[in-house]
Amino acid sequence: MQKRILVVSQHYWPENFRITDICRGFVADKIEVDVLCGLPNYPKGEWFEGYRYTGPRNEVHDGVQIFRAGEIRRKGNTSIRIFLNYISYPITGVFNLFRLHGKKYDAVFCYETSPVLMLLPAIVYAKLHRIPLTCYVLDLWPENLYSVLPIRNSLLRAVAEKVSHWHYRRCEKLIAMSDALAEKLRMIAPHAQIVTIPQYCEDLYAQDVVDHDLQARFTGRFNVLFAGNISPAQDLGLLVECAHKLRQANRTDIHFILVGDGMSRAELEQEIQQKGLMDYFTFEGQHPVTDIPAYHTMADALFAALAKSNDLGLTVPAKITSYMAAGRPCLIAVDGEAARVVTQAGCGLTCPAGDADSLYQNLLKLAEMEPSEREILGQAGRTYFQRYFRREKLLAEMEHFIFESNEVTP
Image 1: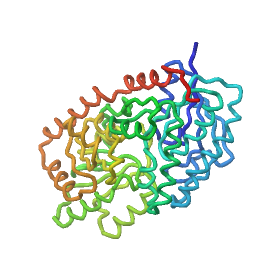
Image 2: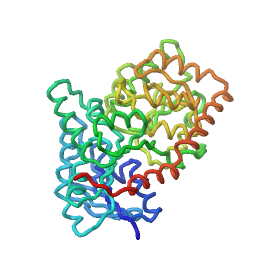
Image 3: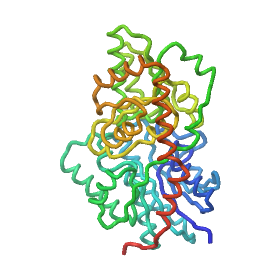
Image 4: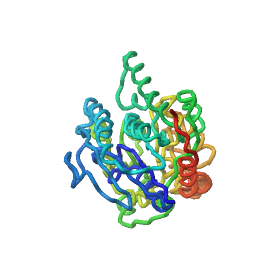
């Protein structure tokens, strides 16, 4: 009998989140998928073309039935707009559950990026229908919240912790991206079934895609690429500090290329312009996922960082797994699990989160390596990807965990 799953995620196609590919994988494995999500406006905070608050509210994409609930868009990405966006979707999501009346699911699955509040419609539906609820924890709350909204008040922090932990404890099953995160979740939700399944990386990232026009645009310099969401958590100010040091050293042979968008882009560009460093940077804006392998192939090194935080260091960002798949050397400023994986793979140079001086030294080391040495680092990353982060293997593990037991917390 064909399995049926309800997926709850505030973000979904055409927004660029891996949950879209996960659902595509479910469908390929003969699982019937319905998705309850919001209206696409991430990361810029503007409605995607063809969408507005009034809809469309029902769509079918790649064999997935999509039910969209309203939300207050993140327009301007100010703290108040982000807060309103965070709280609007879970409320409207709950009020849209009636649209699922008459459907029968074997499992409810929440792909939990920020905010954790997106779990609420999943919790309500799962409890009402006594269906097991699995949450894939990608952004641990409230810790991840503080990287976006700088909350200092101890009372507000206490409330955020209680609210966040309440949501996790209502899940029968939790998926963690690392063993370190799994241990943290066991302390938060001791009665849940918890398993470690790293984020997989789509096979398309493991392709070498040569775009001669793209290569011609950036030829002649050592190109360091960042691809992804431009937000406070990514600590891209480190690249500004490196560019400042390069100018002091009168080095113009290194260039930073940023592909993506996000709430911090305007502020970052303004800082770069004020410091007179625009010659060191090119902002390419948002691109479809299918364009990214060509950027990876063109680049000499791939950059990732996370803001300094004990809890942000519990996970390996999807960006790093895609970098490893790309077969290019990694330049990483992170702590914890991500640093451990890059070091274990031997696929690049790492330094502690927030350490601009060490990052700069590693940048120079990579730039001054022989191309054959960088090739060895890149191939080591691709080998590690093939062993640990392949889509087929990890998707199968996820499906087994979601459907293996029908025990429901009373």
